[in-house]
Image (cartoon, rainbow, N blue to C red; front, side, top):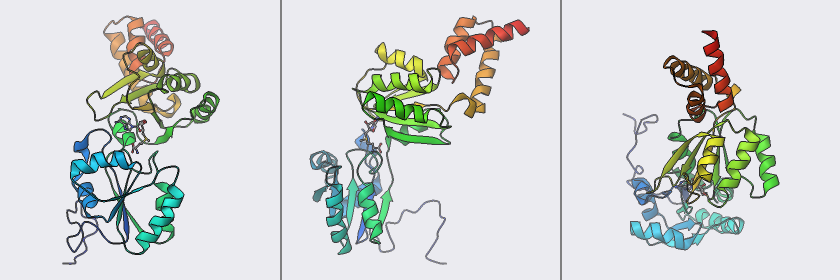
Length: 301
Ligand code: SAM
């Protein structure tokens, strides 16, 4: 039998020689987004095996590394020094050192430093290998119930009001689920701007504090999640991922679901206003649209 078995579903071996780490390689290692237990076995092995660890913030990295009992040389790579730090890492890896790159949380390069370093290394023909694991965008989307095919990962919106509005206006017609990262001090402004520019009836899910003690998912329309935030039902604390469903015309399945739901509630004799409230919270239709639909169906009987 050949010792190469490409296409196997799982591979538990570090490498042919029983090592987790190859010399002259950068490992891009995903780390937890809030729950230390989410570090993978392989991530821990690689962090133990490399010669040095490039990290966004050395003090922050030590929390995770102390948890794993890892003591290594740490090299800071952050948004203000990524270019210079990359040049020196290219040199060290070129001489055969192995390294891991971690960020403060989640997957490096995803709204975090990493892209410049990876592109500098690959440009020099140096091997770069991912050690996959947590990322807030994927965790949030996977439990949102929104279509993930396609999705558009925007990351952080601009902080300035006009730039944020302009960016959202440019995204309004994108036929995909939109995914934004947001900080607690900007969440109210961002949700209000999303409702204004994308349409307040668009389906939305706000994920807060993923994998942590106060994890929360709030579902509804952009108008209703904004109202929940203003009412304190979604506290403006912690870390946020905001997801907005595709424009109505792009999702035949969504309108089909809404249709079926309206029919069922009409058949049960539920009051039109209640149907409008319930259906607008769980689909991409606004209250007014649902209300008009209900009246039309009742009139047709
Ligand atoms: N590299 C990270 C990743 O792979 O998700 C993202 C880093 S970015 C600087 C930080 C932002 O990610 C936060 O402001 C928040 O929007 C989102 N985020 C990170 N951890 C989160 C969590 N536990 N719950 C919700 N959002 C989170």
